[in-house]
Image 1 (cartoon, rainbow, N blue to C red):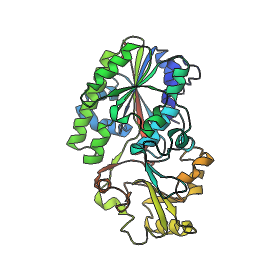
Image 2: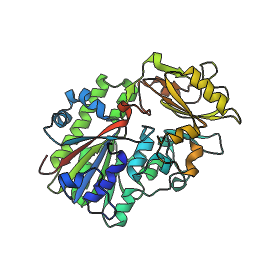
Image 3: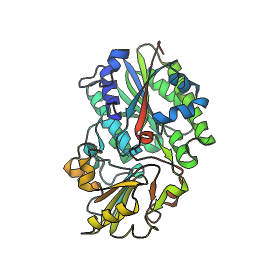
Image 4: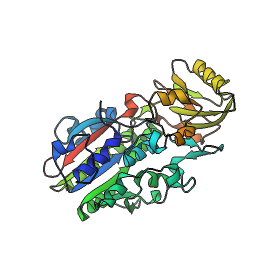
Length: 375
């Protein structure tokens, strides 16, 4: 069974000699201990997308061809969505334990839907996501752990949930991001973390395979090339992703707010287009599940909360997080997406690329390892 995104930072900690670091990825055996490790997460860089983008990305093409780096396949956590995956990376835990179980979640006891990418102070960060992160663990063991992130991310709930305990270095849009990462890696031993979203943004807005997506891939490749070229002996660069993705054609889209019968009995709609959490009116859960099962036959798997948890798709779910999962859970298969035009901003229905579901195209992610002085 492949490793997961949960294994990346524990393995990096092991390379750095941190107490408690666990290398389930075999990095110690293949590259040995390091005094500096950079981890860069490329949002949307699914493993299955590498061959498609390689034409305009010479470094990644060389990786695919075996000319440089070391490529292995990991899996992200489910749902295959950025908030869940970033917190799984940071904590080393599956969503059932850290509680960030989707792009949006119902706040239990209310009709409110929390969108994690715009979450600020409510709910309190350490109550909504109570687990420590590997950044904090490294710093407590005396090893530096820095995160170079867009300045707009500073102080957000998601930043704290995923990177709590890191020493932050804010990056402005006008900054040379590669130079910022290189400088931070050179400044002191330890872990340096970086993140780029432009490939995922292009996939959402213009589609995987679009000219804009290929242009974004070329820019990501240039960023990674600069980092590889700057690696010194004793340092390593680990490149991974939070999810892959797929394009959803118009005829594969279902709108729960216009499709007859799908909104009946539904009190709160959360999740996202590939994984919907339906919180139902009292006593309506069984009827809602039956209606959705019939309507989306062959296009989605429709579970009760208990059935969804029993599959293990979220990992073990702590009892305090159970109510964040819908009474009914709709997991799209194939290239189906369930829109919610009356519940979400209109731009969501205009997206072309999607993720969140359980398909290999969404769940498989790369781990690419580069070592200073070798690759």
